[in-house]
Length: 173
Image 1 (tube, rainbow, N blue to C red):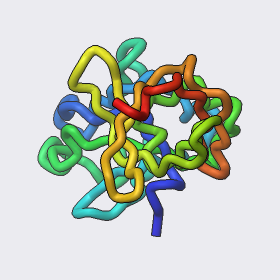
Image 2: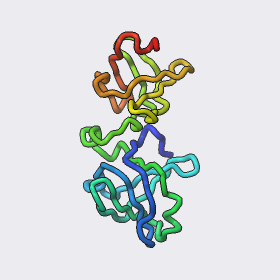
Image 3: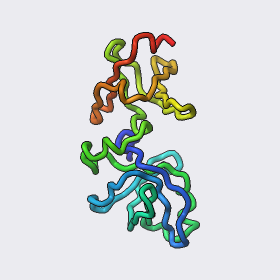
């Protein structure tokens, strides 16, 4: 079974393209080019399910048309509309995908502050305001910290750990 910590988000499926089962994938990644038998992962009925990519082509800088195996019609493609698309971490070199990450990719990472120590795991990313916030489960209570690169001092992707140096008083708000 595929676990959430074994994948990272690369985009989201939009609408079907044409009648042969192709889907528009909104993404900034081009991870398929070097992959043998590439596959993507989508959450279906509460579990992460792999889907092999039969073929793909670029429509624009941010849209890739993807044909999944055994998805051969517009009707069969419809269940994928608006699904988040993930890619397995073990199929890429971390140096290649760090630049492709979004804040959503840090879900489940443990946040450790240089002064306060371990704060907890990131449970959600709040993008409802101009300033993106990371929601952290801090001993059963919700803690919000800014998602700002300048606050991050180190990232350990294998240990799923995000080290930060928060300004004094930020956690007291």
